[in-house]
Image 1 (cartoon, helix red, strand yellow):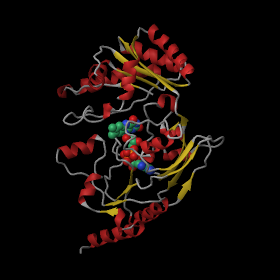
Image 2 (tube, protein in one colour; image 1 turned 120 degrees about the horizontal axis):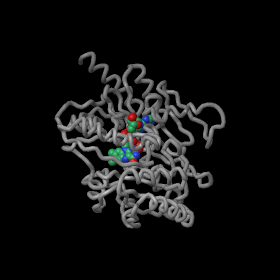
Image 3 (cartoon, helix red, strand yellow; image 1 turned 180 degrees about the horizontal axis):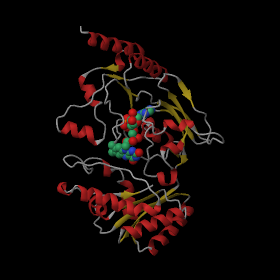
Image 4 (tube, protein in one colour; image 1 turned 135 degrees about the vertical axis):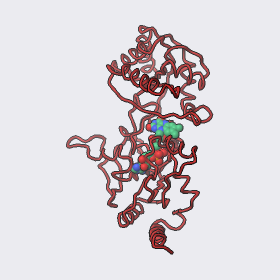
Amino acid sequence: MTQNLFLSEMIRSELAEVVGEDFISVAESDKLVYSTDWSWMPQMWLDRGKPLATPDYIVYPASPAEISEILEIANKYRIPVVPWGGGSGTQGGALPIFGGILLDLKRLDKIIEIDEKSLTVRAQAGIIISQLEWAVNEKGLMLPHYAASSNCATLGGALAPRGTGTISTKYGKAEDMVLNMEVVLPTGEIIHTPLVPQHASGPDWWRIFLGAEGTFGIITEATMQLDLLPESRLLRAILFENLSDALEAGRQIMTRRLNPFVIRLYDPESTRSRIKKILGYEYEGAYMVMGFDGDPEIAALEESKAFEICEKMGGRDLGREPGESWWQHRYDFYYPPKNLKLPWMYGTTETITTYDKIEKLYWAVKNAVEGGFKEWDVQFIGHFSH
Ligand SMILES: Cc1cc2nc3c(=O)[nH]c(=O)nc-3n(C[C@H](O)[C@H](O)[C@H](O)COP(=O)(O)OP(=O)(O)OC[C@H]3O[C@@H](n4cnc5c(N)ncnc54)[C@H](O)[C@@H]3O)c2cc1C
């Protein structure tokens, strides 16, 4: 046995002592599974037959205490650790590009407590978001983080990269719903942040874990704010002749705080291509979906005020059916057979700016992408939301 093989087996057996032989793998087939998430880079490497970055050890811990011990081993041998939730990330954050230990967190899948008075749920971070949602739905509640990947993404995976969802416009992002967390620090120390709805003094230092994608610590548990399942959801679609008028209508709806739970505007190109492909409607212009929820009377009033604004800006009411159909098929945009996939190469960027710059930014990016890569006939399409 060479020195390297000896060391590698020593690390493997130390890890196995922590989690048990059944919960560690060094099989090549498993390594391959964890070498691609949903970001385009590894997909392209795979397609082109290029080598993928693989982990050395895949470990499936069952508790924060086990994670703490694993981190101590990693520190002793100075090897990298990458947390992995559902592996649905589109930015490559879960890829083990330097090898080391891949920590699959899906055994941390327990719901610890649902508090029906304070409307909170305390759950382990490896639970799949949809499973959490189904459990709280049974109590008439919802976790309003409706990401298109909820069927495969985990709670920790929503918090670590600051995920958004379809209804974030009204309910906020995953990070806005979190009340406290249990985190295993890189040193192996386990900490709990205070369980309070708001902090009245001092900086919210614990927010550094949100967006850190595991680099400052591994989230093992979180208490999330829930909401009542809405009594009503009113959806409709509006068609605008041009993007400018549609953006202005959206700005007025939002600045007057009419509180849509969803407002999503497709640019003319995505109206022509994506709306046609997914919903089957053929429209020229900018397609806007808006929805209002909650108490039926309040939702109806908010909707009528928003609709007045749309009409003033030249929007044409397409009625409820195209709005409801969008809601029903809202995730189809991202899954086979209707998603964008190889051999088309594509990338997604999320861009944030203030109202005064939205349209300028849109055209600047579109011109840069389409003008800068003319020889590839690249097409830029976009939608506006949240
Ligand atoms: C079809 C599809 C639709 C999508 N739709 C949305 C959407 O609507 N909204 C959205 O925000 N995203 C969306 N995404 C992107 C992705 O699904 C989300 O970012 C999701 O929250 C990632 O969760 P995950 O459990 O799969 O995390 P992973 O992909 O496993 O990990 C993501 C990052 O978080 C880190 N991480 C994971 N778990 C932990 C933990 N417990 N502690 C610390 N760090 C951790 C990882 O190391 C990595 O850096 C979509 C992806 C796909 C493929």
